[in-house]
Image 1 (tube, each protein chain N blue to C red):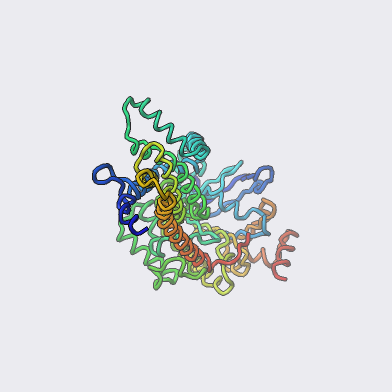
Image 2: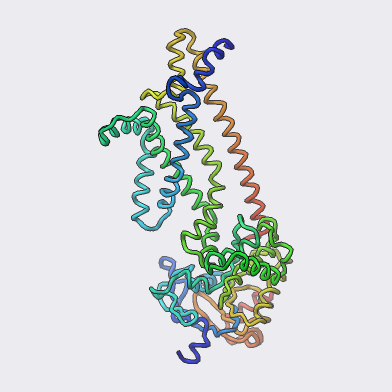
Length: 238
Length: 249
């Protein structure tokens, strides 16, 4: 095992880099990190549209979200792989194609996190913000978003974890991320595939497990803070 | 403008509101003069909170008219944020912004709505927090304050709008009994300074002290509008008599 790690450890970590493009575990992290990072601002816009009373915003945003949540990432990947060259008339690298598919896919899930974060705040916060004369966007910017974003952190971390795992599917179009690299190792070694794929599993498991623990901790901290914030009030009488 | 109109802060005419088919407000009419303190009381579910929330348009109405400081608040040309900046509103649940310190809660409206310079806004916040007895809590976060303290910050936040009209929606109903007094004292002080106020409350002793007139509501209507002496000592309406005997039991 030690010998195996010594021989392929760097390959698992970085793929063929620097001879070829960055891949392996680092490639996976880039796919997931950029995917979640770029879809975040999109998700803010779509998430706001999802909470809007105006059908011109609400309907397209809802169609986008439900459509993307209702189909597998693999299908979006194929669509991107075949459709983008068709539309643009230019071939895209597998990596760029995978990136585009992940960003589109994640924007729907992240948007639902944003929507839940906005709607999850007590109604009294918006009412108080509007009552002191702030406009809708001012209320969002100074009162709702600063609180909602903090509450969203655990969900974002969870989404990142599931994205890290979901990226494994893009090996199918030849992006040299972690799973693709393991396939290559398997092809070189020929024997003992169990070892090859156990190492692969650990590369996914360790960061995902670590982040899950982190997200639970953040969630507890936020819960404790919220509890402290609500403690002084008594039961509500109407 | 006639003299009466000029001296009137709020004029409500034939206000109606439905929650689906249930009529919460059933033809409310009444007026509040400048400098007057109106206490609104009545049994639970009588529409008191809904009524007071229509005045800064937290609730929309289905019929009637509300005029605040000489302007119809539902006038299409009247910017809703401008209307609200002229009305201070204090909630039952305080609704402080938990991510902002006491000072920043108070300065938000002066900074972002009135466009006051930061330094001036901060001085205003210090002055107002001192006024509500919290000069030692300027930089405290809401979570570290007691309910009574939070509500006093909320009052300071509303006062920072320098609004000609203040509305209170059951300001002490969510408080532990020992904290009710500190909040009522602050409101009473405002009354003595001549602030025009409308206060929904169940605190009858307080109502007797601060009110110029008491509106008694039941089932979406105002049954009586009377000075506190008359309200408490010889109420004519049997519903008021029953309410008071239930309260005093």
